[in-house]
Length: 457
Picture (cartoon, rainbow, N blue to C red):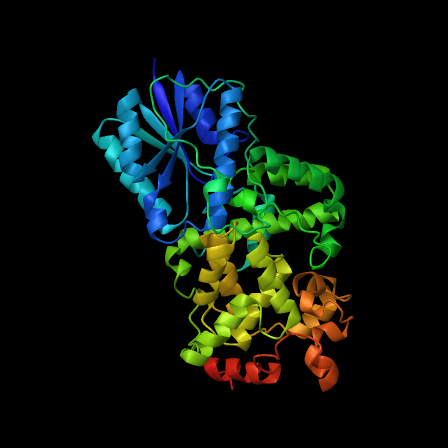
C-alpha cells in the first residue's frame, strides 16, 4: 500500500482540488492534512475573524471527507516539521499541495521540498488551485508580469482554463495518523458579531444562489452601497472553499453582462496574485515609490484612531469602517472610500490602513489587501496615482438615499439624504441634535496635504 499526504493550505475544499485528485490517482491511500502554522500566528496574521471562519472551513472539510470514508488530520507547529513527521508515521511516498505566491508560501515550499528530498520523498506543487490562472502563465513579452490590469485582462480572458474537477467519491485514509481536535468557532475570542459562516457547503450554496438571483444586476448595481449587490464570495475565495476556476467557468456558463463584470473581478484577483508572485516585497514596500512623505506624529495617530473607530465626520467613510468592525467584511466601494480617505485626505501611510484591514477582514490576504491598498494610495498599479475620491460626492452617488449611512451610523438615522452626507452644513441648533463629530479635516485642506506631501505642486 502506497500513501500520499495532501497538505491543505488556502484550498479548503474537495471540489476542483487538483492536489487531492493527483494524490488519489497515484496512491492507494491519502492523508488529508492541515497544519496550523505557528509562523503565521507569530507574524500577526491569525486574526480572530479569520480564525473563526477557518474553524468553520475545517469542520466542513472534515465532514465532507468523512462522508467519503476519510477524515482530516490537524496538527500545529512548524509546517515542515509536522509534514515530515506525518510522512514518517504513515510511510508516505509523496506530498501534494497548492502553489502559493507570497514570500512565506514560497519559503514554506522550498523548505518542505528540501526536507522531503533528504528523506527520499517527493513534493508535488500544483498551480492554478488558489487562482484561476497560474501566476506567470500570462505575461508580456518584455517583463515577468503585467503591471497594468487592462492588457492583463485581455490576455487572461483568452487563456484556456483547466477543466473543473469533480469532488472524489471516496477518500481512503489509513488508520494510524492521529489528529488534534478540530478548532471551534465558539472558542475564538474577539470575532465580529456579524461574521458570515464559512465552509465549502456554504460557499457552493452562496455561489449558486448568487448566479441565479444576483448576478444579472451585478454590472449596474455592484457599487450600490445600500443595495449590497456584490457576491460576498471573497472570504470563500480567500480560504479556498470555492475554486476560482469553477467560479469563472460557472459564471461564463450563466452568461449575461452581470456575470461578465463578475468574471472581470475574479481576474482582478488573479492580477494581484501575479503581481505579488513577481514582486513579493510589495506586500510591505511601495510597488512604485513616488516620494511620499507620509504624515507621522501625534496628530496623525489621533486621526488614524478616529478613522479606525468610524468617527471621521464623513458619514459614508464612517459607515464603511463600522461595517468592517461588525461583519469582518466591507463593501468594495466602501473599501475604496476608506482607503482613499486615509491615504489621500489624512495622508497617512497605506501600510497602517492595510494592517488594520488585515486585523479585521475575514478575506484579508497579502495579494488582494496590500495591492488594493497600494492601488488606492497611488503607489501601486493605478495608472492615475493622484486620483482622490471625494467622500461627499461618492456618498451622494452610491448611497443617494442615505440607507447605507443610516444603517451603520445610527446617530444620523433621523437625517434624510442628501443632508446625511454633509451634516456639518446643518444650522448649528439642528446639528447639536446629532451626536456626531465634525469632520477631522476639510476636503480642500486634505487635498492640499496630499499634494504637498507628494510634492505635486
